[in-house]
Image (cartoon, rainbow, N blue to C red):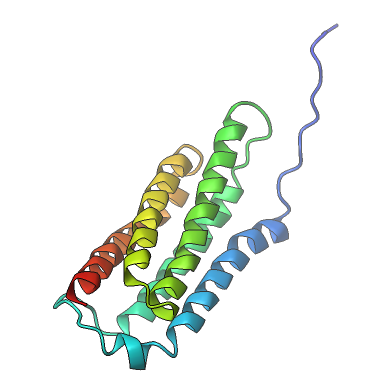
Length: 172
């Protein structure tokens, strides 16, 4: 007869809840970004001095659509790896928290840059975003390597956005 205590396992996230938890925050971030840029592109943004490596405006929505799809897929995969018990459960929660923080920083950058026209503050936000995306990749790696790899192009784009934001700050 065993004297060990039995700890009941928590059920895994239901498929519909996992999908909603992955897609809805990413869709809300994308919608906020779109709403924050629409009126500013032809006016304020068009009047800024930009570096020679600034892509044409049509590149941004195409890139972000692809990246947001990959971010949501990464979240969906990561949410599917929740450990039932044990010390790795804390690491998983830390990865989920990092994911949430980077997504929140993503949501904040666009209104800071485009709506508030606070290019310097936006640079601080986008660099913090880059750090958090890289940390999210590192934390996610142990639970789902595909989820981590799905964030690598995002990290590359955010690194480019950081450079672009810095150049626009310097030129204006």
